Image (cartoon, rainbow over all chains, first blue to last red; front, top):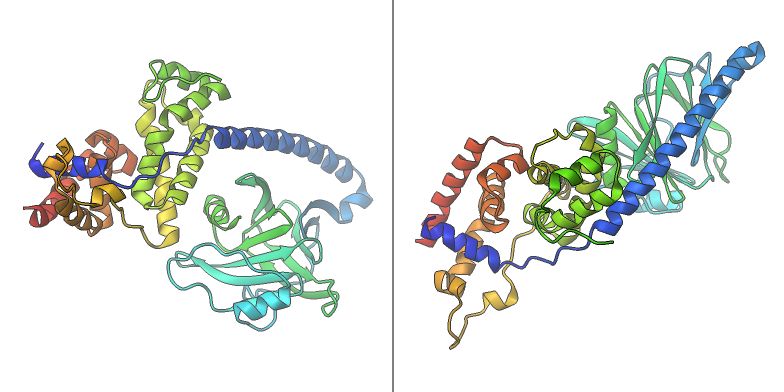
Length: 236
Length: 186
């Protein structure tokens, strides 16, 4: 080892290195929570499969909407025929762009954002109980939407069989990843000023998850793992 | 519960095998044994204590989930450090910056009339500051290698595994880094 290398080793001993925290309890808690979630998911899927089987055996039920999942402020529905919709920009239906402060005032809560390499987004969109902005993952544009509690009814419908629906875990939080065939997003806002269906458009891949009283929705052409990675940076 | 002593547990392969079969207690022993080096590695790559703790914790959780893909008989420590280092890099990318490493307060001060420690005899306070500034000024890829090799004490092979690069690349980056540092040090 040269003198410089010895000096580097000596320098390493003089660095301000914080004491390593005891990670065992936190890691054990997270592993245990994950196990419980997995067990719950297996049970939920078993119930779901039985439910679908029963519903599909009844012609009336088959032609009607099969309500599938309710996750936070979002309802996911399976339908045989998609409602009329059109291709539109990610922010279509969310009103005019606003500053962050203005959007947060309109939404009634502060938005949680991931850390950005460069400048944070400058345009935000808001309805009562809902705030959104566009972010980028590499060159892929994404729409990040956050909804407060159940104040906003926000439903997504998709054609039976065309869209893949996967339960996922965002850290310790439950989520759903929708991908594949075309599906439709409908904003149905029940606030003081915004009543009824506002906008309908085709949607890309979507990750939905909840944390506390907040529902998060991340939309764009991202693979499941990419979306999950980003979601973990956003979730408080 | 009782943990194995700090450092590499004697029966590591048995612990890993038990953890692979779902034994959480065995995995807790592995976490206990490697949390120090995992945190240190993450800290050196991110420069922040909070980010390092998150990266190390997430790394351990991910490693637990990935144990099914761990090759029996392989070394657990470098495999784990690779996962932790990935987490640390992700956090560094998200933050868009890397905190600078600093000297302990006592180390930054001149020793006065006291007899110098063996380390201090190799490197006096002023040269420590200068050398650390030079390390902090290295490009990220070279600084990562220097930090893991000399500050975390990883072998060349372990540093290569942790950073996901070839051992030859560790060698060449180390050599380029030392060349730059020598300009300051000599």
